[in-house]
Image (tube, rainbow, N blue to C red; front, side, top):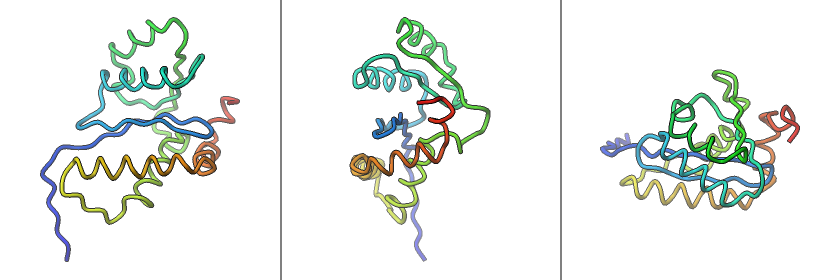
Length: 148
């Protein structure tokens, strides 16, 4: 019998996905408004032009700090919310499912740093599989719905 006791805080992940690529950040602890703004800044640096951000009902997505940041972008960011509890429409959920079931199963890290390092390495390797990333988008049906 394998027993493993975790005595450290959580590792949270945030990601944005396009047809052929995705962008991600890992954070120690919960993701709240400031972390969401940091990620949106990251996306704006790497993706030119206007961005349509389609996201779920995470409380941080509705925070004042996020709303103020989006308003300050003067139309460069457009937000659309997924229906309540519709993970099957969110291509990022397929990304996380693949990571958990194919890249991290049976992995017993000694600490949060080891988990973070392993997850980052697995996500970077996954970026080299654009057809798989495209399959996540196709499976969700979201890109067709928004004619992306």
